[in-house]
Amino acid sequence: MTGKEAQIKLTAEEQAFRAFNRDTYNNGRLKEAYEQAAEFFARNPGSLYAKYAYAVMAGDYSEDKSLPETKRRELLGQARQKIKEVCEHRDLDRWELATGARNEGASSMARKCLREGKAAEAKAWAAKAVEAFKEFEKLDPAWFNINPFYAWALAILGDRAGALAAYRDMYRKQNAAINDAEVAGFSAEIQKALNGE
Image 1 (cartoon, rainbow, N blue to C red):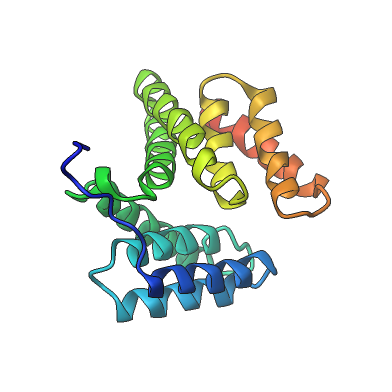
Image 2 (spheres, one colour):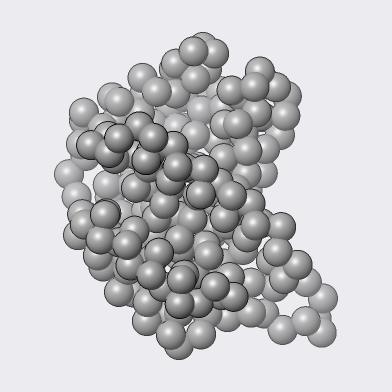
């Protein structure tokens, strides 16, 4: 971004929706938070933030194991497509939430490369995700949603202890007790992925 290019800030409507949607999400109502994001994006298809919010919520909702597997795959596909579009947007460098989008996009690409057996590419994407996370933390240190992406990136880079610590830190940001079952599930998931399973 050059000195002549103004930063793209969230509009008042986007800021209000962000606070409203985050409150829903933080209170454990993930399906409702996803539906809010889908409706907001449908009303604001040209909004970079609306697309980003939809991608994040679709990706998170795809983790709901009570959903049919076909629905989970559909949601994950939508999330990946929309976050890719956000990361490829011509104005991304000027957007105030660019580092958050880059963390999620790069972390997702790292996991994709890992699944495809492209270890070097996976680590390169993971390193980008880690750097983006560090920058985003300066802007929004309380947003826990980004931690799993950071944790995956650390795991792919070989820092298993750091990955688990980053995942656990998600609970601190929510002022919640650590869910040992979820942490164990994440630990098992990264181990399977690193083993190529």
